[in-house]
Image (cartoon, rainbow, N blue to C red; front, side, top):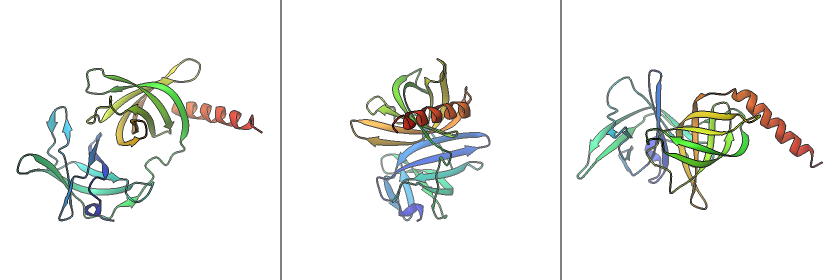
Amino acid sequence: MKLGELEIGTEISIELKAGQNCRTFCQTVEQIVKGVVITSPLIYEGRMLDLSAGGISITVFAKAGGEVPLQFRGCTAKLVQGKEKRFCAIACSNEGKRINRRSNFRIFIGERGVAELSGKAGTKLEVTVKDLSLTGVSFVADKVKWEKDVSCVWVEFPGRYGDRIRIQGSVVRVTEVENNLLVVGCRILKCANDLSAYITHKQRESLKKISGKF
């Protein structure tokens, strides 16, 4: 499947890399013009990003026709001027490939926590941490309170023995579910804890619960 074959309304994640820096933006396909995807401009710190400069690697992820998302690598993008406003135009000559963006083992968490929205002057939301792996974390948030242009969060929730797990994540997808809630998926950028030890601890807890039923 080509990028230009996505349907209008498809939610996509646009990952930008420049050196060691990485940002992910969640957008929606608004138009398809001659195989080029048109979305709203990418906004960072109140400014529209012009992606036509060199040195920026652009990858698009789209969930289309299956549970495993499509990955489009080697994309190009630039700002274009419409009749009334500006848009982001994204093109890619490569075929999309199915890829499990979190191939590491996921463990269910189910803990209440707090998400601090970067760039929102300390805005914090109560969330429920859904699952966790060594490379990613997802949580459930109130749709009304979530800010659409947030690209990075700090997530904090109870760990072992009274400590707190604190994770910085780059938002890679936002999915609307029932009861006016959102599932927010993040790629882990930093963690102040030993995630491997915590995941092992949660696995042991799950096994104890399962074994107790037999």
